[in-house]
Image (cartoon, rainbow, N blue to C red):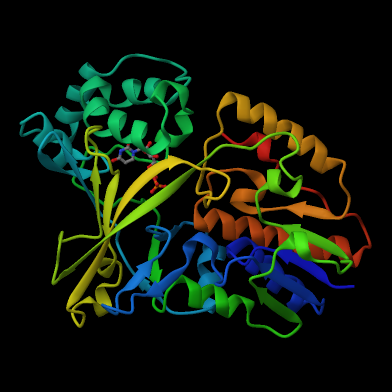
Amino acid sequence: MRYCIVGAGFSGAVIGRALAEAGHKVLVIDERLHVAGNCHSQRDPQTGVMTHVYGPHIFHTADERVWAYVQRFGGMRPYRHRVQAVAGGMVYSLPVNLLTINQFFRKVMGPEEARAFVATKTRPISNPANFEEQALSMIGAELYEAFFRGYTRKQWGLDPAQLPASILKRLPLRFDYDDSYFAHPHQAIPERGYTELVAAILDTPNLELCLGARFEDLTEAFAHVVYSGPIDRYFHYDLGRLGYRTLDFETIRARGDYQGTAVVNYCDEATPYTRITEHKHFAPWEKVKIEGTILYREFSRFCGPNDIPYYPIRQTNEEAMLKKYVDRAMATPGVTFVGRLGSYRYLDMDVTIGEALTAGDAMLERIAKAADIPVFFVPPLQHG
Ligand code: UDP
């Protein structure tokens, strides 16, 4: 019997390839007509710009295994992500660094002076229980209100006091002029786009890829199913729907260089969108040759039944619902849940790939021993 992998994003592709390379027959399906899930990139026919169809994706990692793995499947071009932020009619540098602090407070401070100055603004909260407390204890009320409060309310549709501190912990605070958005040693964009990269992972003997196919419609019996779709969907939403944020994009087309960088965040709550992405800047090696430009104005809203899920919200009530789905999954033989949607976690690409590599190895070990394959390789409920 074949193994079935549901979803041709990074999770599904990496696990599918691991099984196929070990000699197992694998069917990978995806209901969309392209691979790479929400990382999908496609050349815009009008401008020739490689477009991140579901919003900006920047590959960054400190995991040498993951870095070596992605490099096997296509050229990775160095790309340093920098973000500008518009707040109160001014443009600042993000993540909050010495330039942001000096400009925002109209000061000329060195690193230690700035550290001491910001410390006078923060509130001592020993164990921040949510995003707002984390922000107040890290950067103080003024920076929080200018850069995080409004943006976060737009992005998540919730007050930051209702969100976990872990979301803010994604971003560093720096007391030097390093304005690199990510601190990881490897930061890159696939030369031919994410879709080509994932297609190359899937391109191996023993693996059949079937696009435009829904798991619900399959009748074949499989040795095991690896499911990277939404866990609540697998169980027909029997216990309710886990909440996600989805994104809408408004396309802007122009000539030349429209905003001068890849991503500008709009932090004021009164501006309805969260950020504007100018895709050509993600490919500095080819942008000089491209005259036109395409941008996405990004709007976040609650994900309805027919929308594409992006960000798991993970409110307290959802954690409780997730727990019930996890219990149900644990009692369901023959299926393993993986990835962002399968485990309802806010995962970066490198973490997704790393977990999939580990899951692939562990599955092969179990198969070799004719042992049961776990329902989860990473328990969804241990997420920060
Ligand atoms: N965030 C913010 N203002 C910004 C950028 C980020 O308030 O200008 C907050 C927001 O809550 C966001 C979180 O920090 O969801 C994480 O930001 P990141 O850039 O990692 O988000 P992603 O690119 O994954 O959407």
